[in-house]
Image 1 (tube, rainbow, N blue to C red):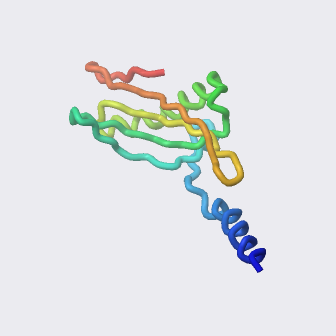
Image 2: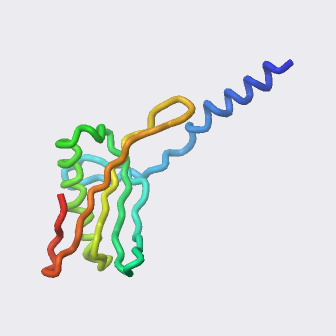
Length: 124
């Protein structure tokens, strides 16, 4: 009697992650692609603003050299957007693809860039 209800619950849980992807594919100048989940401006209590890009990487966060190289390429494009947005900071948040069956987990790492008084950017 309870087996059909259990089957419906298990089927519902299994299909939760089968919906539309939560990212948009963007091509970088090199031809490689990134999965952008969100891009927008964030405000701090000090009144300063930063541009934040959240993207899903196919790399492991622990693969620091390749991840840093990937972010360097992303930064070359995002830097122009940050200048146009007239922000004083930028954040590139690299997030691993979530893994797990029911409870999905993943790691992330934020790369922070700060605009200097001479209008150059410091980071990486």
